[in-house]
Length: 79
Image (cartoon, rainbow, N blue to C red; front, side, top):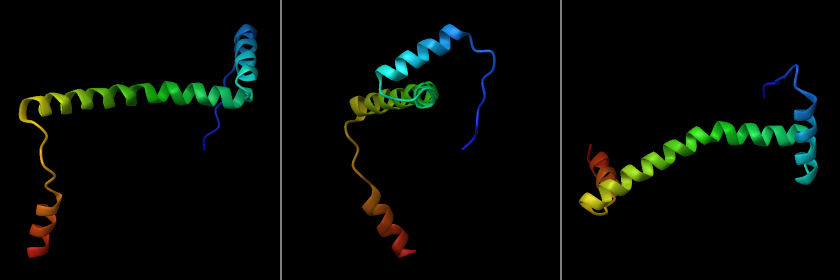
């Protein structure tokens, strides 16, 4: 893992994170990691929702498509 250092953080921010961490039963380091994890995952969640909407739109237009995996495997085996 990579180590990250943040300098010149205002004392009120540190105090707030410390309070939140204590309420959640975590260390400040783990609380900050959790916040960073959520922040980094927000874009991923946005794409997942966008893909789901696209899939739902296709299903609405064409219905639920059958799973073609068995046919693809059978065709590969014939080669």
